[in-house]
Image (cartoon, rainbow, N blue to C red; front, side, top):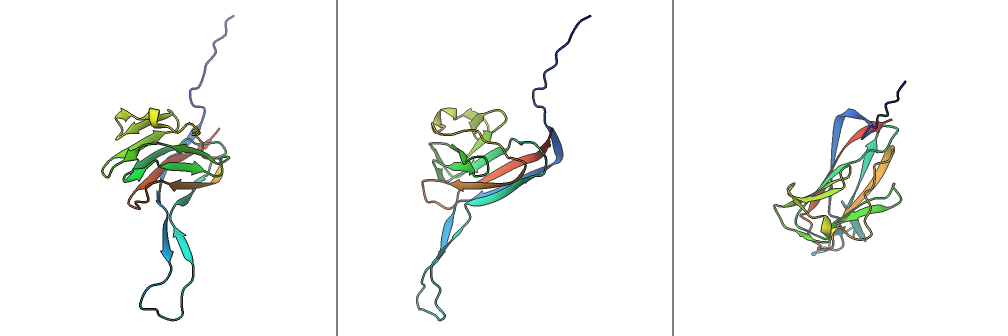
Length: 157
């Protein structure tokens, strides 16, 4: 008699369909323009900055996030996963991107050079919970040309 123990590195069964969602830096619209026209519009509306990702499975999924410059200290948060966030304390210039692999816990500049040392101390690698996940994206620079993509597959166990 003998026993063989097997360990599955990733126990998830993934959907064959990969979903990619894009979220932009939040901007404001509204206010007054001149010359004034009637009826007047009051207030300011936020556009961008949040998105929903739907994990159709019954188990958590680990996304791949790419943040494209111009960005200063970008942050992506999963409100659904206890407000956990990843913030990278560096500037990403136009033409460059940061790739965050949530399954490997890596942060790479342009997919080749590690930038893990710029990870904010309060950051946690979050998961896409089963169902609808509310994701927010922002940076500290105010340049609205930066954006982020989130790529994931629904997962089951």
